[in-house]
Image (cartoon, rainbow, N blue to C red):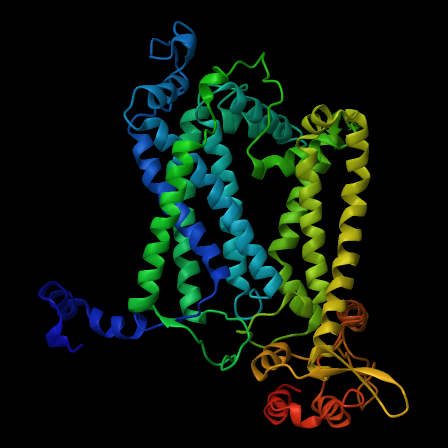
Length: 553
């Protein structure tokens, strides 16, 4: 389309802002097509739904802890004293047209937002999409997840009901366990002794203004970097580190993305209409002297509560200061250490492996056994702590002693990740060997032949060129070589001890990993055949396949 063909409004803007030149380049940007890339889109669309429904709810919600007598429609609580925040939440649920639907859509969208970000980050981790040049985008994405969890927890506390108040009381105890500064932090957050008078107003500002603004800014930077770095893609014919195979942004991808947004919105609306979530009228207003039986936080906070529940209770006193290790270790040390390790993982892996290359093709998880094992260990650690957050419900539902559940989790949270790492790593290595067998020997046909000397063997048929390309489109990963201890002049290399540690970690990282076959190995396998009666004329794709493997050896 030429500039003269633009509609008048577009031509007006083009004359003043030059959007035509920008649009021609960016609207034809190519994006690959794979279902796993929709995980990030689900997170983005859930965030949009949160903003839209949140704007609706702010019109009627009153962020005040002033005490009033409830005279609304819900007769079971009529005449009860409660905060304006809780009363307005009841009014939204029972008196505002569409209010309960919007409340539930908002809550389900928050759950979906955090879940989609978690699964999206797992996809990025297991496929190696965080490698150069996308390390900063990994940190940005992980920061968005962290802010989303905080945003969800704060929003969960705004209605000032008994369930959310119980969760905030636990949080107040964790903050108070901070040596020296714990009391001051509690007074700053809650505006005095818990629950204070300013908790809801302060949380409301943070929930509707501060954190959404930060997330929106990070989303903008995240999407800009995705476009700037170009999208990663899975290995396949025609796909290399230097191109992107897919569909243009306009009109194909825009139409698909727009349709998918309405699918996500529709499913979230159905969940809000048909699946009850957070019925605050059943809990009643918050009272610091009461606790709801079997109370549980939203699922994404379960791992933090689980770490506190399974920790043995012990404390120490130094110079008049009491240190509650049963809160400091699980609430103030383990979560920050876990979060920091995950956020910095791309830089740690790059340092261990010495890999400074740019990567635009994604890994198959089996081709990086150690990384995949580490991911499985993280998931196991998180999952066991998550189970610990409901240890009382596990005990009551299955008729098990609560102490038995707690003691099991205390050992399992240490041994479980180690076992998960070892099993996952061995499975990945086995799958690598199976892939190499397919490359070298082809597929089993089920046809058994007998040689003149009486030996039996099975005929094989070669895999297709396309499958061979996908199986060999990976690098040969070798342990880092740190070189000799001294140079030609006998001068000792700097940071020798650190480099030795790095070399040991590199050998561990790539230990037992199965490298893809070399060109010579493929040619040898195809030249000698795989047993009597395995005729070579069946290997129709051999020559093309040799070209593929020779380019990647």
